[in-house]
Image 1 (cartoon, rainbow, N blue to C red):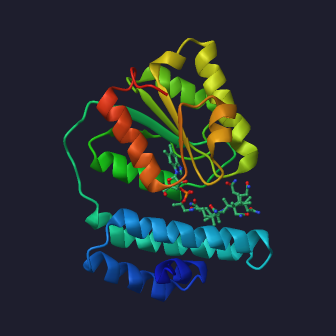
Image 2: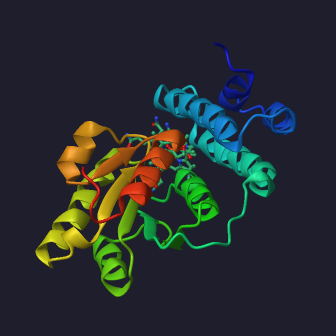
Image 3: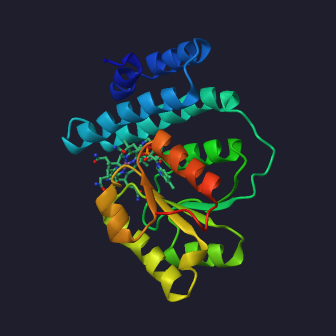
Length: 215
Ligand code: B12
């Protein structure tokens, strides 16, 4: 089915995108459904950039529009002050500054009662491991959008193994280029490249208990 919001995002039509988001939020669409339409639209922006139909300035424009979408959606994402007992470390891997997807996942996790420590972007493998070591986190989420940075995600998992922390955390890797192959290459426990898959994983971990969940 043709999705008007996805098309407006893909066309970098800021006014129409924001108008459609307002309309959808007021007509019963969930924030997750809206984010997913926008994510699919911005994926097209990426493809047009690869095909040289769009330029770097268009990628920057898509970031601005997406941030505008999130400003509309944020007040509609329920706030949950209760603590479900799970602490998560999140960050974008070294060399990569993409953070729109990571930030959305963090909103949703916080609204589900997870305590999230956000390490930000361009995070070295050593910093991820240090954060796991110093915290009570049982889940580590790593975002990666640039294919050539996937090797550094593997380095995080290898370092965790090397210093005996691998069994302490479930590693979830997420982002546009992530698939089963990336999961296997990096040694992560789970992968997600859209919001509903991500939430499904965290719910599963929550239901089964982080350290006993089957992979
Ligand atoms: C916006 C954008 C930018 C913005 C980023 C702004 C920001 N603050 O993040 C800017 C303009 C800065 C940028 C820069 C660059 N970009 Co860029 N960018 C994009 C674009 C168009 C959209 C990314 C995005 O935000 N998507 C929307 C979010 C919601 O989706 P998402 O990130 O996939 O996240 C969802 C899921 O993946 C998942 N998820 C994400 N992280 C995690 C983590 C966990 C733990 C879990 C569970 C789930 C999860 O949940 C999210 C919610 O649905 C993509 C195209 C694409 N297809 O992704 C290119 C893209 C990623 N960029 C690309 C490139 C090449 C670059 C540059 C190298 C360009 C340049 N010449 O400088 C630089 C790199 C800068 C750097 N060092 O990181 C390429 C990467 C190609 C590749 N194979 O590696 C892409 C794919 C475009 C393309 N097709 O060529 N970019």
